[in-house]
Image (cartoon, rainbow, N blue to C red):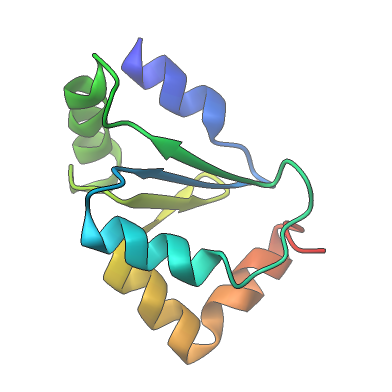
Length: 106
């Protein structure tokens, strides 16, 4: 169920962040991504904190990304990591290129 939910959210032209609102790294990643103008439907921020299957979801993140922590940020079907990773990609200018390459930006 958790795996199916995650897989249905990941698409090649979309940015998806799985997060918990009380996590400072999640807030960091959300702040970075909020600077970009996404096309409607191309960015989704999913709060997993209230979900009964959150633990299973995080186990699945471990399986597919090598880490079970949140945030898990996906550009297309590729996980680019967590809060620090997103901030570093943004600082280096690489994040914008990655977002443009999947056609997610306006």
